[in-house]
Image 1 (cartoon, helix red, strand yellow):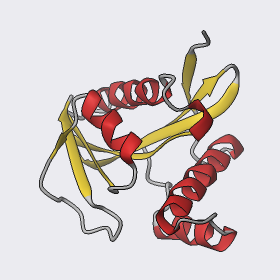
Image 2 (tube, one colour):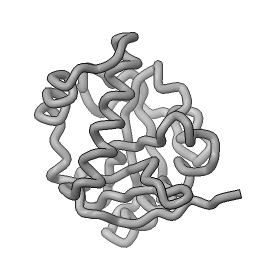
Image 3 (cartoon, helix red, strand yellow):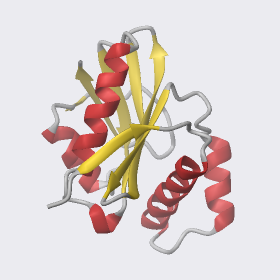
Length: 155
């Protein structure tokens, strides 16, 4: 059985940009129930740029870039998990867990004592992943139009 490797990469690298586009295509398509179009992905990137991420990680399985995750700092002690994604054909094989571990370790090394995120109801796999890894639902902390669930975890 192959194992995941997770490495930090610049968020503006070609590899990171391709994974973020795949992530957005996936979640936009799921939201609308049809394939995303390029303009929607471009608009999503403009609405929520990743240029403030402290760290961005790529997960590789058998040498293929199949997942990503990053974080930004909300304040000196709170990290926010962003862009968590594993390609659908690689889900259920440990990539999400490996990415969460890398982000959490990096957030702690940056001074974070907690991490939070928001997500949608239809992203069932993501919500299950967070719950399995100790994230608890909390009161809303953002008003993002797509946020339907808010999670946090002490690090």
